[in-house]
Length: 366
Image (cartoon, rainbow, N blue to C red; front, top):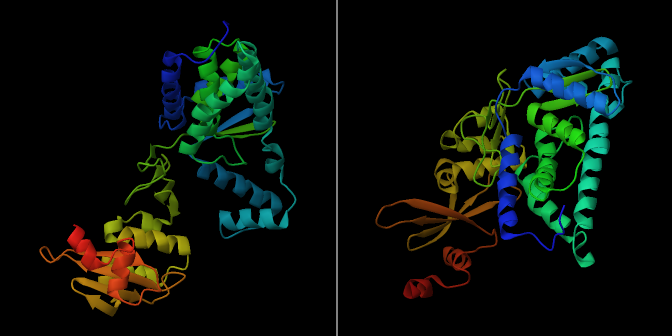
């Protein structure tokens, strides 16, 4: 590997290319190939000194969790009304772990993190720093690559869970390693990299133990908003082949009763009974203040020309909702903006909306 002063323009241009490449892998919705998955998992187990496990496939994480909880219920000799109730009791009261929990102790994750991810990361970082022409550059280039590849990609993906290996999170680290290997020609352990790469590319989520490895297929659909947050309107943001779905509105997980209905059909009356503050906020955002004003019969406090100061006092939020209602004289279109609850008049609310400019002055300026 030749000495590196700094990245060339051609190399810098490849950073977003590799980030995009591994983001596509991380968010793939293709069905996994069970033969390739089994080959990748078994090879990885052998590489890190573990015996080949029994490999079990499920269509979704939910299906795997239901199966695990069912076995726990049988082994603990108790019945629960729901899987979530069982899981909550196991966590709160620290019930004696059943055999299935002993087996699924994320041993593979620890080994991958220690023997594949960390070792590859350390070797590549060392080789890269040793190739730098000036000592002052040591660590700086690696940090910048880490920020632009791994860290940036993590911001675009969901946070990692502790109870399983998410291939999309491993893909963040893979983007950095791949760039160092393929673009900067860093010397690397080919066997370890091939094993790490195959696990990321071939597998879905992994619940791994010493004797058993559970593989969950990838989602059938993933939907996002323009800020890369999980989002869909009237349909699941995450959908699996077995029907398990997750609904989300701009990154906020929704119950099915809201998520399966398009926001245009959400009802203002739901705000009167919804106890969760975050869900109320989402409902307000989706329904819009204008429709809420009409449907919940907001109280008129003051008006000035085509502007009206309104109050909705139905415990929809932590504090009363004050709105400035604006009616377009030509189209009669109604628009509403939320204003602070200390507004005493419509004109004062207009000044607040216009950054302190009085409405008469504002009309002259425009």
